[in-house]
Length: 488
Image (cartoon, rainbow, N blue to C red; front, side, top):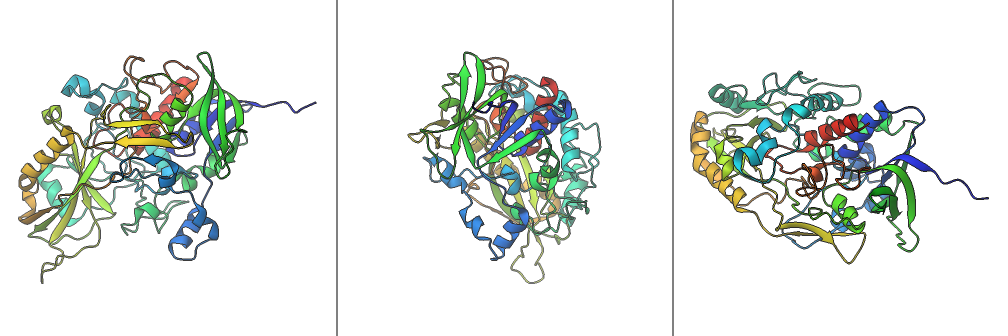
């Protein structure tokens, strides 16, 4: 007589922010008898080994780490999409920038005639922003441009002399110490930020990751079974119910002999390339699946100034909000300004530090025709088509370039050197399975439950209807907490 097959109460794909924060809340709300399966296509490559690898003392197995480039087919060789496909997802490589979205970001159609409104408001998400900030131990300022019901857990990083000058001119809610998952003081599992400007692999282990923040609680819970090295590529449906997931060994895939796991609830927590790919592979006919893949755009500007630029307690010391919100969003991007506190010198005697480097992060409206994820000939590899920047971004950039001298007038400008190129990527993979009020405009509802398959969650940045100029990770985390809290 064969062994009884386990049906899990919950099956989760991925171990990044979306999956882990959802799972954390689910476990808090569930009884001791629940059975949860987490399926991760990669494996844990510990922080200590990543550091050793970067120092040339490489453990051999790190050479075999799957590259994001090999995980999908990109038809646009100029436009990269960066992420980490191993345990912890992109928490391994993010920079830890954690501003919130602004209230108006959730009502772009109503206020500015762009895209569609979110089916939730800022106030709906605000308590979950606070909870996510507490879990991550975010360092942030006392005064913020967005409403906030609780203070940040850690004190703000110190401002530079340039930041102090800008804050004096614009006020303490328009030029603020950047909210960051880079610790401003020593914690039990993390050190304080060393301002090395190598945040993708923090040498001080100051940045929050799933490994140093939640691995030893969420993934050691006795209710959780973690299977690594398996790629989920399809959900099995029976009528309008998700019954389980189909996966193969990532290193040695055999599509003729896949592994199938049954679950009462399925939560897809991959990124905005793989979530829609799984849905498309499963036969999902919703017309918005895979449409609108998007991310912000950015460009740098160096400004020679009549003052010394020193100090600052972190790699990106401040955010400027003067061009973030207003009626200009009817025609062009919201823009978040970042002060990049990296090592540089101005090549003029006596003016070595009379210089500042700013990055302008531009909101992009997801384009349903230019940004598409669709099935490729390889069922395990999504095919991504991305054509070009839209006019909304171009208009936003022109506004900033026209206003540049006015924006930075407090710094006694001597010369403005604008980088004409855009950054290749902001490392934010967003939209493609957006949330909305019903299936006529979206894939999932306000709790990220599929409109048709009501036991299927589609988590993460793929659910964003619009993306704003702010870094998305905190919002992804807060959405997952809200989804699990309101659904169980």
